[in-house]
Length: 146
Length: 146
DNA sequence: GGCATATAGTTGTTTATGCAACTACTCGAA
DNA sequence: TTCGAGTAGTTGCATAAACAACTATATGCC
Image (cartoon, rainbow over the protein chains, first blue to last red):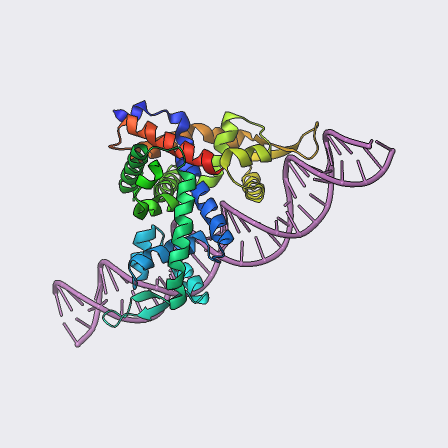
């Protein structure tokens, strides 16, 4: 029963996600200082589109672990910013594919650098093997609960 | 240069905190099913008050890593729910101490059980030594960025 | 004492979130 | 063929978040 060995008194920092909140906040700050006028949440949607342009909104829900209304509104705001545009799928008219605009594509290089900077700031003093274990644990937790 | 060995392509799940989002969502669900009509964020404030009743709002900011307006409104809502009450400090009239009501105290036992259940669900299949390493990494990340 | 500075808390604004309820479209089976 | 179930997306509502700007109180230095 490995779980019983876990100190319950420290469950709190897990549950509140202080570390990921801190990372998100720092990334937001770095984006702003780097001149990128987007939110971290918008960046997280763009991130998946840079890897795979034309994803449906449902795909973006799965990729970002947000519900459909959240993605609807994030895409709304990204469209207002002229960074993406919705295109109705011809095969299935229920589906909106979300495509990057030229302006949206242009943000990739600059903001990925800022994201890498943020991550390096976060991971100062953490050995690579422990990072791997941490990622592994977080992945299992996610799979257990998703 | 340990950080350079970190695969940048996987930075995303770190930054979005999918694991902690999943935990929070599950805790919210468990609270609801257990009949506790509070949000996870409200629970996280109560959690610190159960450990240390009478904290100031600023103390709660530090403990929960939220800014002052967030705590103002969380305490507003907890006060509406009759779970806490603000008491102006006599020594320093700028300070509100936040005290649990009887009703607020009553929630501890039941919801801590639900929180432990949630954590056990999250950590199925994760060996205790890896949990410790994960906590250690998240603590360093938090300290690097806070 | 009195002013500058710092700290505690509140309010306004924008963005994001989750859940529930809704519309629109697709697909399979009677 | 059509009707019922399922899927994609939107809208309404309540809560929460960050940042900026504000008030009120405390403190330290002259």
